[in-house]
Length: 210
Image (cartoon, rainbow, N blue to C red; front, side, top):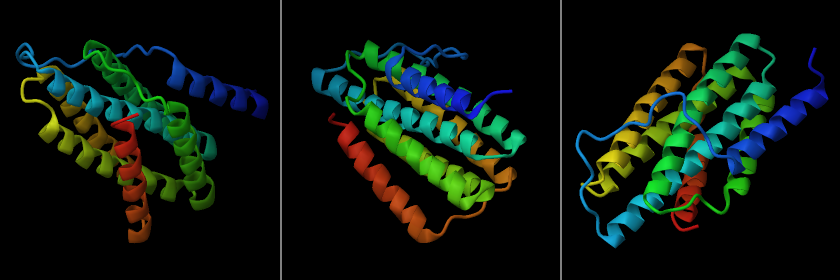
């Protein structure tokens, strides 16, 4: 029987792996329908910055699902969070790989992003309970879906690989939101949603540069 210390050590190991390790997806990285067009240096930098933001989003997703899985006492819900986390690991690996191909780098603030997201997820799980925790997942995924759509509009037209990755990520996030709704999520109050959008705006703006 795992002890509380075992659980804490596992959480710490997951955090270190998320922030510092190289990741390997279970699913093959999506590919564009045709080869990428040649990109100018400004276009390449913009594509790299956008994929860095997406990578940060996946770092945060790992933290959120880890904290929520730890917070719940419901074994089925714990499995739900762990399975969703595995798909987010694919996203983490895909964005990491694409950043390398574009000559970019991950955010220097990834430890901070992870810690902040973990704290938010733990707060939602412990103070609100399972249904609120699931509601937090639904709202997070909805906002991520909108954010990914904006990146599809902003990515260079010839960057077919990045667009394919973002499109698959968007489809997965939509499904995660639907799964959370089916599991019993409650609708979050409007002020909470607004606060989440503000926090996300700060994160994406900073991560685009740092």
